[in-house]
Image (cartoon, rainbow, N blue to C red; front, side, top):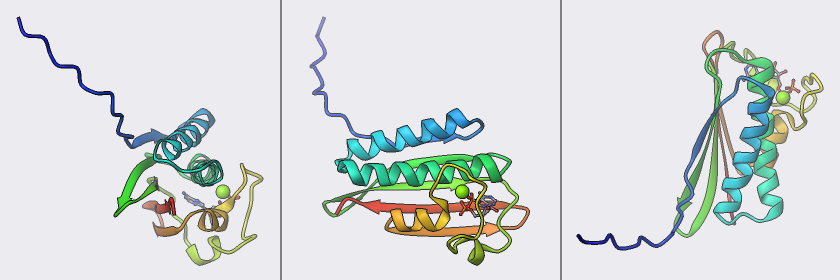
Length: 145
Ligand SMILES: Nc1ncnc2c1ncn2[C@@H]1O[C@H](COP(=O)(O)OP(=O)(O)O)[C@@H](O)[C@H]1O
Ligand SMILES: [Mg+2]
């Protein structure tokens, strides 16, 4: 009988998907983002920024959206720079006035912080696509530069 060679324990950080159905899921998404940011080498502060952005996007899914609501957190690599990509998507109701929603102080329900303008400031890239009645998809990225 041949013995299997031991595979060295190199851990490649992998992306995660978190379905947002409860407040616990919001917290879980935040923790996952922080873990992943740490795993790819983000410092304390940058890691918290990513986690805070995820917390805000996940809270928005929880408070404002319905249908399948999920957060995807994934690892990016561009040349030698690592990054984190966050995608928040849901099945409705969509944001009818995206421009207003991206303005500071547009609205707040006293939720867990940040707001969409906050997320824009915390992350390097921010893209939003929303269709009334259909849903919203936000893609935000942060690079470890
Ligand atoms: N995923 C979403 N689906 C539908 N509407 C949303 C979503 N995310 C945000 N919104 C709308 O955009 C507004 C602004 O969001 P935000 O800046 O996070 O402020 P807050 O959540 O404190 O109201 C919300 O009040 C809500 O009307
Ligand atoms: Mg919000």
